Length: 269
Image (cartoon, rainbow, N blue to C red):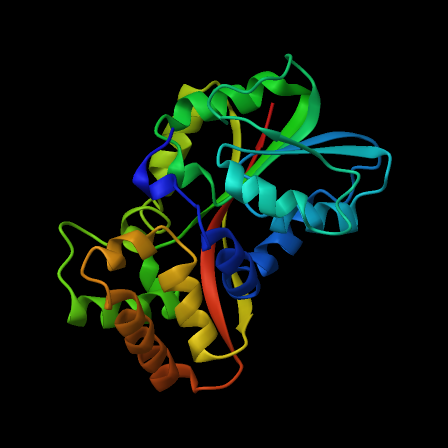
């Protein structure tokens, strides 16, 4: 599953966690944990755990009687998550969501926040989630909606497209915001054997320390960094400045709040 859009290495994990987390991921992570808050014992598996943002929310919400296993294919992201304080109860393991190294009927819930967009074979990943769930288990996952429902990301793409001409599309629109068709998601789930499917569009408000912080998040905390750097040795600095200016024009230079919209799928065996 190693493709350029799924490579988070170098300084990307730290920038992703510090800058992307509060603006894009933490509000949705709290919502995921809330949806599982009725689970008082058993085991939860998180796939595509990244830097452990959802993992931390699960630890804060679920009692110690619930065992938490967090997996990701990308070892640098997982290494960053493993270094966070307060996650000592979590079992971390490198794993491909499309071929999970767990026995059948091992978990009471499987969670995947904003990871499905990166799976080359989503049906296989959904089938694996079903396989490792116990009877009556729940599969909870999310994908981003269209990029125009994420005004900060949309502003970044406007600024970048004025500076550079990508070979095709930018990472942000191609992958994170490229899988928003609820009908297609439902068809993949049914192909994987799921029958009870609920899809909800959810808007959450994220927070950024500044327009500059948001620009660093998007330009330097995602695989889009490599796309930008391909335009020359100064491209990353120029792009980050331009994106910061574009975001500041909409939200101001200082701390700000902004919405993002996602599709949240709750699926049961």
